[in-house]
Image (cartoon, helix red, strand yellow):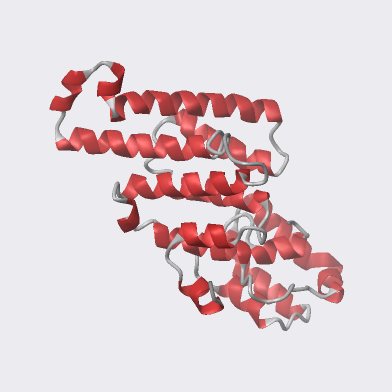
Length: 248
């Protein structure tokens, strides 16, 4: 993949495979969570919604392993329940073949949504060592996209997912970006304090305010300032916020 192809890519799988070795497991898990949050309106099973919320806190060390495992088990149960609706004939209910197209479509959406939630917990359980984050990201992205369109290659969700990956990874073709120490220390460390507030509260619509503070502090890096002011969707793991907070 070339730099122009990276910014034009509309295939999240291709981007995830390309990022192998260039992105942390933490960021891949945050990507998976973000994929689930984008279809939260379709995730009607509370057990699925719960594992998304707990996983996001678990990634940041704000939920215990025990809490996460309990939420993951419940999400697996939700996935099992939706499987019975998606493919009832496998569970001894052949009469379900008489369902209307609307009922079958509804069962598919529910199953894809619960599958996406299951992927962020147990989805990568059989992955090779060192590939768990990648497996989780791929699984959640696929199922979230299929919730919008069963014909995965045609799903309208794939392009926005690529935007999420660009928000997480920035430009993998450029060298390390550094925020000068004087910028970090400026005005009683207002830049990192603002970045911490945005990250902790999920207020990524405030990134233009962060850009203003960076500029006032003396930051002249156009890549950083431009990214903060992009109207694109931003998420936990945004490369600029992570850079300021020294998160990997």
